[in-house]
Length: 160
Image 1 (cartoon, rainbow, N blue to C red):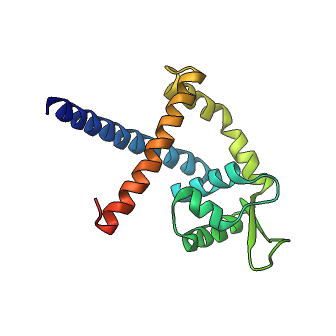
Image 2 (tube, one colour):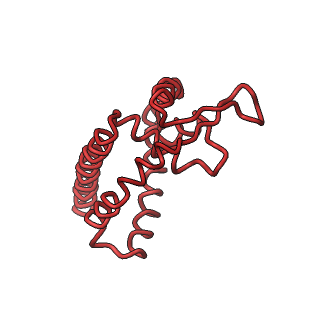
């Protein structure tokens, strides 16, 4: 019984650490967004596109899936970002029903302008970890993320 109590306490500590990390990263994203004159969700959309775009653009659905948000919200926000000349939205050559979204040169230049600060920030956040430790941590966190999605599904279906 004591082992289970210790495990529960450790799990609660882990969850509160994740809540704290999430809060701090959210504040950081808000700061980056403000530097570009956009909202935090718009910043995340730009970052997701930058991450996912392999040179041909990326679909709004892929961005929505990456950020775990509704595709209609992505559509609405990408239109605003396009009007600010931060995104280009073009019809997919594979299927005219879909758009491929990519960063404009202006967006790439703005992101590049922030790169030194972003690297310094990463050094501050991850300074206590070497690459091997960070890789290990990422693998463990990916596993926990997958398990938490399953737990959330079970809870919503009432089968826990």
